[in-house]
Every structure is written in C-alpha cells, then in structure tokens.
Image (tube, rainbow, N blue to C red; front, side, top):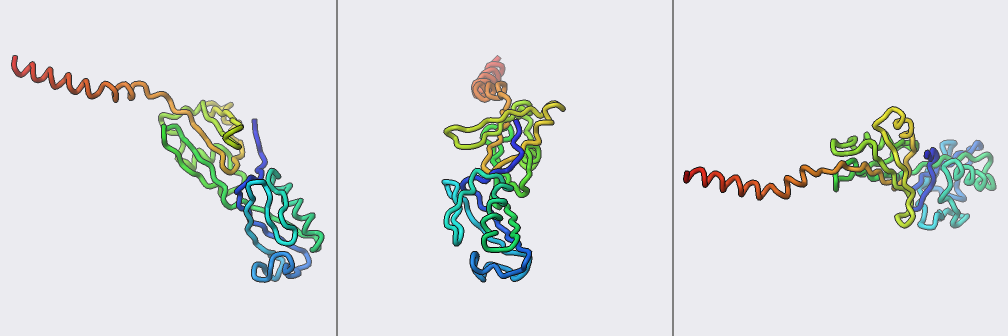
Length: 209
C-alpha cells in the first residue's frame, strides 16, 4: 500500500509564503515587521495544534490538520483571496522527522525530512542503511497514534520488493527493520562464564598430572 501525498499532522511546524500579483504590502494580516514589500511575499511560521487547528491572524483557528499540502495551499489561497488579488500560497513543513530502527536491538536514529517527498529507501539510506543483523525482507513503517497505528510491510531484498519503497514518509513515522535472532550470540553470552571456569579447571588438572 502506498501513500504518496504528505498530510499535515499535529505538531507540524509549517512555513507559509504568500505571494500576490499586485505587489501590495501584506500589512493587515501579518504585520509590517514580518513582510517584504514586493512580490517575494511574506514568510511566516505556524504550528499545527493537537486538534489539527492553526491559530492565524484575523481568521483565528483554522483546520489544516489532515489536509494534504496542496489541499491546505488551495484552502489558504481561497481565504487570502478575500483580501488580496490572485494570492499564491507555498507551504513547507520545517520540523518533519522519522525514527529508524535499522536492524540492531536497541539502536535507533532520528532522520530529518528535509524534502517534502522523501521515500522509505532514502530514509533508510540516511540512517546508515540496514545493519548486518537486520532483515531487509521484514521492514515495517508504523504511522499514527500508538493506540491505533497503521502498519505497512515492505521487503526490499528482491527487485519486486524495491518497487514498493517509493513510499512517501510522513512526520513522526517509525521505520522498524526486524532484527534477526541472535541465538548463537545469546547462547555464548549465557554459557561463556561456565566455559571459562571449565577451561581453568582443565588446565589445573592437567598441571597436576
């Protein structure tokens, strides 16, 4: 299953750039200290609250959580059209990150999603790749609330499996590469002290003989 479009989630921090074709100062909505006086527009930062709302000047709290980036841009353009001629909105999420468990028990890395369209394969590569103990054929992406998460399964060990890694990551996703069982290592850890004691006893017996 693929999810190609990035959606806005609670706690996302978004950068909003507003462009207009008439070049008017964007004073009424954003404040003179936060704008440029030309068609380069204004660059503002907002945070999506836990309920998906964003507190914006003039309008108050508006619902952006759950929308795709393009849906949110179109919604804001319609709202800004009440005040400006042919407004054009560009949104970008600036604090997106995912956590990657790349196949070693207890080891995880946080990867920043600099680009909006960052897929699963790129995130794995940025985290350092899959370790020698990781199962490339058993990769899970966990998304959403922990109470009711969505879990997506991937296998990148085969050519056919690689077709599915064009899966777009979203903020706060968890990538879990299942580690292979380390039975031999665990067994050695458990019996190692006894083997060492047995070796010492054999050496002592051999010495007295």
